[in-house]
Length: 103
Ligand SMILES: [Zn+2]
Image (cartoon, rainbow, N blue to C red; front, top):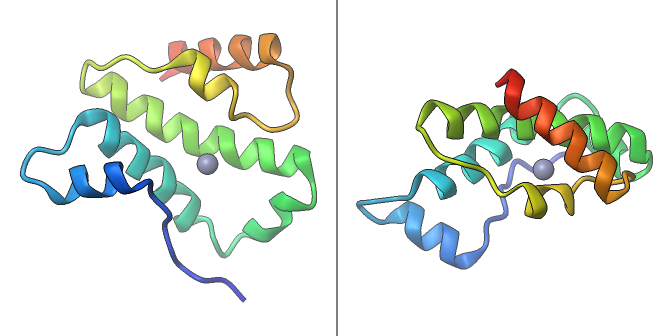
């Protein structure tokens, strides 16, 4: 069974509820919405198979980076690289740099 719930850090949630949400926080929402829209596509599997998890994260980060770029914002390479499952830091950084260029 899948529950359509988005988990956001409190400070991000509060900012999104305000009259002037930041582009960065909106991009986090985009990321989570991307996961949510794919919830039917066996999201739970990602916790069992790291490769599948990485694929899902890259799809969501692609949405997030595209949104940031469209709004002339930058992204936190170090932070995101640390959140990619099953990849060492250098490979993650390389992959993200490519993703950003393609966005
Ligand atoms: Zn994610």
